[in-house]
Image (tube, rainbow, N blue to C red; front, side):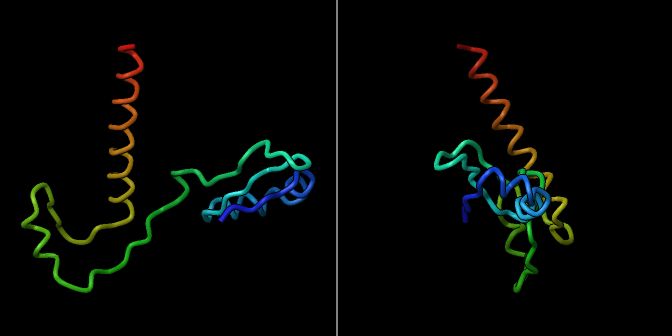
Length: 99
């Protein structure tokens, strides 16, 4: 959910807005009636919330490329997401260099 906030309000309560952004909130920063900036959560600030499996993980072992040993931790998910982002960034950089 995006909220609109004026510069004076943001300045007066900056730490509260930063804490809210860490928790996933987005803010449009307005100067009079014009949007001049956005305050959004950093991708590294948001972590995955893990939900325990209700059933067996044995079926996952049959999927190609999936190897489950123990539980999937938030740290493991952060690592996977980081690798996916790096792959995307590498492809983007390669496309920029070739043009």
